[in-house]
Length: 361
Ligand code: PEP
Ligand code: MG
Image (cartoon, rainbow, N blue to C red; front, side, top):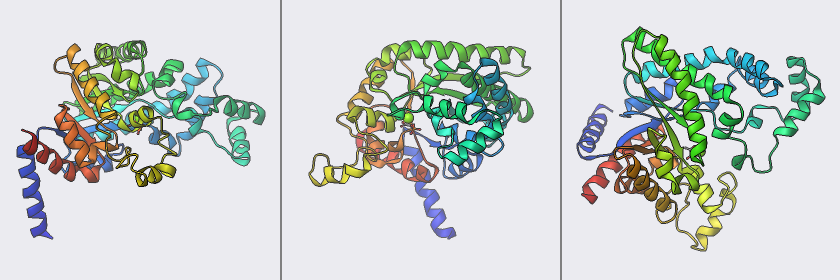
């Protein structure tokens, strides 16, 4: 009721006076972005782009792109996806106005976009006018024993530069159009996932800059954009000083970072984690509550190393932990600039961030 809502608003405003952390949200639709804004989100810290590839009318072009056996065919399929991606981003930029929107380039293994069962494979082959056998071969070639440790994230951007180029073109064109149409000052932050080596980031940053600069040169309006990286592979955390040379910001992907630091599959760990908690091997599920000693040590190290290279490097977190109070407290203590969490956790994140500021300063 109105009374409760007044109290809620007062508590939230009070929190905002004390907290030092920015509160961003993970959102990949204009609707989620709107919900998060109503709850007080100050930006988008993670806009995943994979769901957009699954929508009807597009998934066929995605599949066409994956089975393409020449660069030209791949490019043609991506050209069909481009207007959809551009509109996706335009709608999100319009909702967010001049607040930061961090868009992550494609992350999942391509295999996820292809059908699994015999009948679906047959009908897709027919739709694409290719032999069933050749489609089966493509699917087999993409199969991996451990896809989450395989051909995904920035590795896709290295293997198929056209995919990331299309996405960067869509992000920058969308931002320029929204600036022109609405008079906004869109903050487009392009985020590259799963970086493990400096060289990957050098190549992908250069490629993104080239696409972006060409579009901006031709445009009649200005645009501020940045290119940053997720820190979600332990090697990237260990070498964060080198990685920071080529990144405008860092965002910790603590879901993957937890998986890779423990060597627990994030998709399978649920099956045995309760036994581990029963035996007190650990007290809390490290995928829900940040393991401050181990994973956190990597986070703390990467913050320090990153800021050795760039004193004011903007750093946040966008793993599930960004909406969990004790993890937020840790983020405050190691000096992150913001946490990003799902829209419905934004209020609790605002409160937790205020509590940490009060407790620690
Ligand atoms: C992460 O790994 O923490 C992350 C935010 O990305 P995703 O969950 O999409 O892998
Ligand atoms: Mg990840």
